[in-house]
Length: 147
Image (cartoon, rainbow, N blue to C red; front, side, top):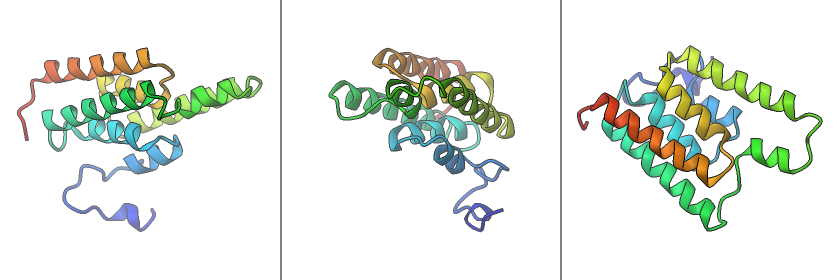
């Protein structure tokens, strides 16, 4: 294990075999998408509804920036637009395997895994709207107390 991965400041909610920051790096997620993953993944172990509210806020900002042309598509969409059609199925397959591994190792429940998958592979503003709705559904489903 890397030295940075063996230490966590405040808490143990990231101490797993496949840590959130490693997933964010492996998927080449941007700042906003990475924060959505972080807050959705950790909400059951840390700040509950507050974490989901933060995830929603980062998704809203992602959609806003994308809508103003200030944020490109995620790498999966970018690769497909750049003519990587021949290698695209293998690329997407590898990305999906990475998402599945992260969710499995971290025992991410299905609704949260769906959000993590969607934010890691979004392509359109409509995708981001759906992610916002899914996070709202999580917030309503769990009715978690504010931390």
